[in-house]
Length: 242
Image: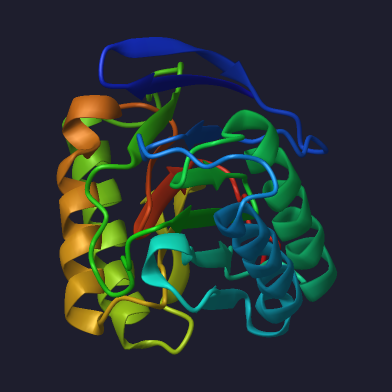
């Protein structure tokens, strides 16, 4: 499936494979560095190991390690709401390994996969909406099944309704579908990281939905993916729930 990807002024084509475990994107967002085998490095490795054990049981893990705040990393990992425990564990382990390769010395980093994302920083970010770390993906094909403006409104309505459900659910995850034409549907998914409140979850999702006209106008599929929430819609089923 061909997708277009954009972050600020960067755009390129991304070819996704259903069996690929390659990351979607990552940021090394903290300019503060640490050295190999330093106290921060050891605490970070311990934190990532803890997250790989904690996350699969519920799909979400959060924590920090270290006694002194100068050397204490804070981290969380979240798996997509439909992902199995085994696939969740595989994804978080892969994310923990890959982020060390891509951001070997940064005290803050985030990496996204189709099935999970992982984030850490030397500043406590729990409960705060992450507006900085965000990217977009969209199908390169335009909608032909229905008038574009009508399609865009159906997408917005679907994701808005799902966001209301997600904020009230224990997993902060919701999925659903909407009829476009007699035999045509759109499928949607929204999810928040469970460290944020239901109010902040709704704020994050509403903000992501508001960006769809800029990135995904009349496209057959699109995503807004961030460090606190993400949304996605397609004209085909894409979750394991279907």
